[in-house]
Length: 299
Image 1 (cartoon, rainbow, N blue to C red):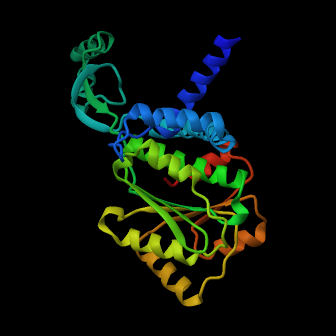
Image 2 (cartoon, rainbow, N blue to C red):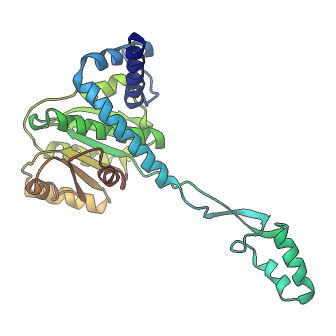
């Protein structure tokens, strides 16, 4: 029983490291990696929030990576040179000349059977990764509990994608103001930063203008040029018409895509966030493949 319990603990820690330890950046504060792992293990044993986040974020992460892998697969489409084979769809036109002359026709079929026809060599060129990602997570009072865990799971999944594709990621938390900020250059992170993000919570009111204004500023910086914004909230907030007009003007001129992930709220909340969003995704379960696909498809 003790061995089974220890094995379960190791499996949980491995899952937690996959969620929180995906980066390879340098640590802070003089702590070694072993100490950071020990801290994560301690939090995993003593924090129900972290335990649930690891469970949910781990599943979300696996779905996200599988979908990204499928998205990256595509047929060969770039000419790399000439090779020998018998694929008539890639055969060079000169080989067809053998079919014009009856005396050479048999030579054509001999080359076909023996895979000696000259044909185009095609290779698959991986599609270029998109630009940076900006994520803002609502940490106001109404997000307490499962909504907050869902929000952080989405943020951690975006970090996984950023790390795999070496994309810059800017993460912030907000209620009525922006509280914390992390700039993960090339997707590199530390367990310390990720735990700080996971535990970040304020419980205040909700205001959309401060995080949108900061996302606007970041999108104007050279590092986050061509960035997309993922805005995660369960709330509603009044926006000054002038700010909304200016923000949307910038968004359209710079092709600054805004995807709002609305957690567990009704249509009236969707109508509010749609004023500044290219797409609004209503989330009732993060284990719904369609929801995960909707969140990931633009990023």
